[in-house]
Structures are given as structure tokens and as C-alpha cells.
Length: 104
Ligand SMILES: [Zn+2]
Image 1 (cartoon, helix red, strand yellow):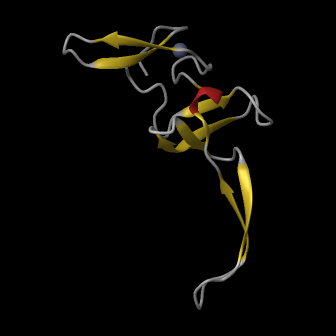
Image 2: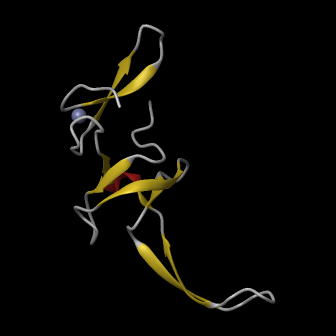
């Protein structure tokens, strides 16, 4: 199996209140099959200052969403796509766009 989604990929959100939005992947948690997308699923944290000099207040931060809720956007055709894998001559397995067959 290859990674469907990688860090810094652009992905489209398929479900939830952010459906249809696109953003870049900030972090991935492969064990939990979750990822963080910039500007999506922002949770508001109300922070109290814990240490001296640390500001409290309200902090907005992206939270992890399930990896199955997103689709990678192909860099060649700019559309959200399913991922095929392709084995190169060098035995390396790469991702291939299911629409335009480009490697991305
Ligand atoms: Zn494509």
C-alpha cells in the first residue's frame, strides 16, 4: 500500500460541514488514519496562561479529521481524484491520478 495523501498535498474535503473546501495537508497521523488540513476543522481553544509570560486567551487551531473524508487533488488536472498506484521500472511504487493517469 502506498500513502494516498502526503504532507503538503492539496486535498478536497468530502464530508462534514467543510465539504467542498480545499486546503493543504499540515500534518498526518498514519496510525490513526487522520490528518490536519489548513483552514479546515478549526477548533477554538480557550487557554489560560500556564507559565509566566505565556499569553492566555482564545487560540484557534486546526484539528485532525479522518483521512477517508478527503480526496487528494491531482497536481496535473487540478481535480480531486482516486489514487492508483503504479510500479516504475526501478521497482518504486508511485501514485497515479485515476483521471489523467499522471504521476503526482
Ligand atoms: Zn489528474
